[in-house]
Amino acid sequence: EVQLLQSGGGLVQPGGSLRLSCAASGFTFSSSALNWVRQAPGKGLEWVSSISGSGDSTYYIDSVKGRFTISRDNSKNTFFLQMHSLRDEDTAVYYCAKAGGGAYASTWYPDCWGQGTLVTVSS
Amino acid sequence: QIVVTQEPSFSVSPGGTVTLTCGLNFGSASTSYPTWYQQTPGQAPRTLIYNTNIRSSGVPDRFSGSILGNKAALTITGAQADDESVYYCVLYIDRGVWVFGGGTKLTVL
Image (cartoon, rainbow over all chains, first blue to last red; front, side, top):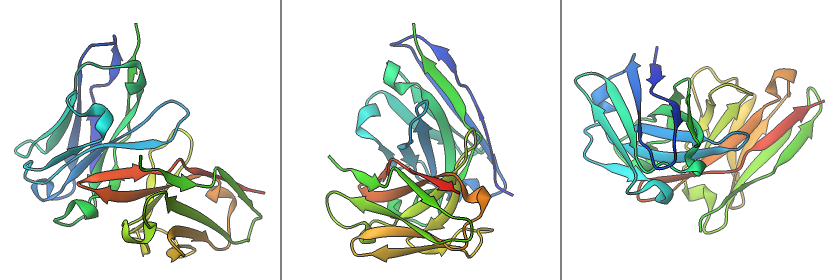
């Protein structure tokens, strides 16, 4: 059974930094692309970032480029979202998600989801 | 700017059939690997359909995906009370980027 256990959310001031973690089990981690998706309070889902199984390919929504970095540690079955220069509009529940199978980014839809972690950016 | 459109809300009677759609302001959703999710309040989304019409593991066959014109569609046949949820689609745009629709709040009454 695929399991994704998230940690690292919390309250941070505007301009601050935070790192989210997602520990995975139940699948071949190093072969799987991974996603981060967020949901602002009372709003819809927003895809944020993806990373390939090897970590060589990464993709971001325009609004976080240059501020957020997705990464993974295949030796620990864990991946991360490092967030810098946080803004009020980054306040959301952040979900990690295993991507659908396949070698191409067009197959990396968010599939199995973590429980979500709340990031609140506020002074 | 890429916008993925969904009906804001829909209602269906118990036992009835409803079709939700997912469109793209530039291009056709049919070539964008549409995926559908169900989300209830306070819960993580659940994947229902991927790559237009492939049902995710454990999803009942009363959920089906298709293409209607240039839109992706999710049809629920024989709606049940616990289908009352928000349904999201996501489309693959290009260069690794996915865009979600705003979601459709489905009421079963």
